[in-house]
Length: 461
Ligand SMILES: NC(=O)c1ccc[n+]([C@@H]2O[C@H](COP(=O)([O-])OP(=O)(O)OC[C@H]3O[C@@H](n4cnc5c(N)ncnc54)[C@H](O)[C@@H]3O)[C@@H](O)[C@H]2O)c1
Ligand SMILES: Nc1ncnc2c1ncn2[C@@H]1O[C@H](COP(=O)(O)OP(=O)(O)OP(=O)(O)O)[C@@H](O)[C@H]1O
Image (cartoon, rainbow, N blue to C red):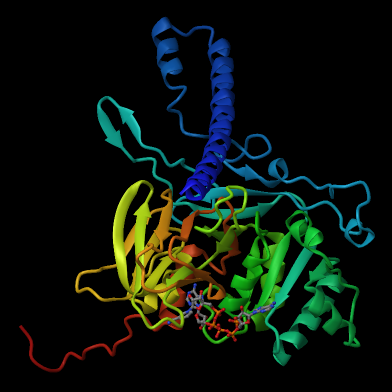
């Protein structure tokens, strides 16, 4: 229990740090707004006391101006304020030092798909006794480069000849026509070396270099299906550069870009601005009952789709106790449980009867797998909760956790899994915008609600 308490504390500390960061942004924004107001008040020599009071009272209510002010306006997140370019350590690796500065960019929030850069903050205001959410944001996020992107990382589906051929062609095009540095996974660099058309590409050969990738890569290009997007996300344990996913799989729910039009698509993305979907990830900690020593905890695992806790090869019912923050939720008795992100709602969770949720909706899905109960409906919980799934001591068998369908870990009685939303989402570039892409995927990928339209002939009212 002490280990569980420690992990919960770590999660709480992570949340507190993120909140402190948000508070700092808010403080800067309010300070800047107040300064602007003071300048206006000073300039307004003829103001009456009444007017002055009115203006001052508006300080905290005034909506942010459009995105013309300063580096990021008052309402964007500027990448170069959070990213540093230097490779740490005294001797940066020569291959990595070939890479120039990371391109900076700005995120802005458009309203109702309007790309004019207007952003309204999410807030609930209490004014004259009325609670309102009139300033609700549509959160259609646009990415606008502030300097030219220079480095692209390619992630490709293995064992596919068409992917290998297209990857070589795209690398050549990006280098020759766009002067882009290209990174590939180590196995791809060997594969490209055997290709006549090989152009120098960079790679990494140890975990430390891999951990620094997000500081060097401006853009990730994936060639494959949804599994390749999941693979690309799994390489980044922290911030993830924007992902441009080209469809070269069978379903392609998260791969909106047509690979045969790669030149036009990459041209648009490299130029910007383009819409992105900020896909939340879940941060999962396995807490071993056996780890009595508080210091021994396993590395957290980040998932883009879901973590599944199932019965594995055991033929007994999975028996799991589930808690949400400090509240007991329920006991699962069945084949297992899926804790899914909204992006993962159209994957395994959907097959187990969960709802399909737009990936930009902030929530966590709680979907049982074959529950042996008539009333166990799936839930959607808010994004800010921490879930704890515990294998009780009186469970007949072990449970197994798997992460985006990979890395199975056995959970013994007494072990627990703790999940919360990670502060590091995966920004995926949209072909049109987040909602259009999502609806297109459920129509074209899943054939959602496909039915022949009824004809006019026949009985009528
Ligand atoms: N019964 C099921 O539906 C079932 C069972 C096991 C795993 N899965 C899913 O497979 C995922 C792993 O994918 P993979 O490609 O590495 O394995 P895979 O090759 O076995 O493909 C699984 C299928 O799920 C689709 N898929 C993956 N993520 C999706 C998403 N977010 N929305 C819609 N469809 C999606 C893929 O396109 C693919 O068709 C797991 O995260 C899990 O969600 C589904
Ligand atoms: N770069 C990679 N290295 C290792 N494994 C990868 C890589 N890219 C993808 N994979 C794995 O390969 C498998 C298949 O990939 P993917 O889902 O992209 O292709 P697909 O199965 O043809 O497409 P779809 O899922 O649309 O049917 C997945 O399990 C994925 O995790």
